[in-house]
Image (cartoon, rainbow, N blue to C red; front, side, top):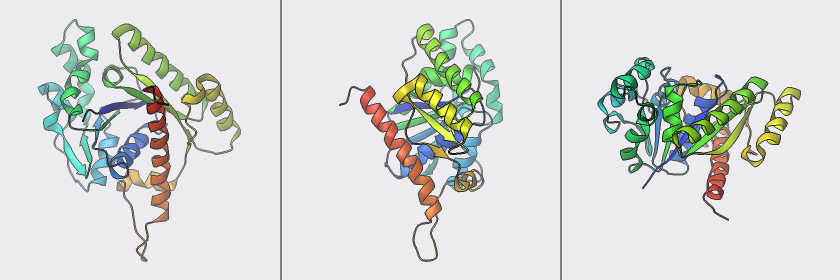
Length: 273
């Protein structure tokens, strides 16, 4: 077992990045039965909050900051549900630049590749590792990109999000050129607030012109149930008849479709036919 590591990002906030991390990790664990880990690198800890609620956990004491300080992330793993684990973030992790400077003064390469080193023992325990990061050019995104095999870019269909996606991909290339990062764009996931809207269609068409088949055919559209998961955690409800809740089914199936398409992209990038 050697995990594939995925960073999910865009350099614009509020585009659905954390939603994608939590839903992809959930369907990876629940529907694909892959041993899955989420590492939350965002000091706001929104992914940690959603997954804690998913696992009915009231408080998580283990955290990624302590792992970075101690040089060992394995001791910071919190079990969420079958096949799904979390290394949670907290607000104190905002001091990551200080941690890196104290550990590696005057060594930029070791500063940006520290997570890459810490993640190696974890790769033997999992099939998939998802990284959630703040929407900024920073030590957080540097470490996440350097540690990842693939980048999943989130594109909310508005101009600023497309600009953020362009910058994200260009910055990824900078890390490849400067620090020999080993990652590819796995896919660009459109998140559309108003299906059929003129601006939404224009931005999506422009993204397809720029990035071609890298833009996924599956489009994440606004669903109230996805929003509810932020407050309640991800779940599969049941009706009084015993049948699965159709709105949960719809939300889950959407991200199963996303993951299926990403799997196809990954197969092709590895030279599959």
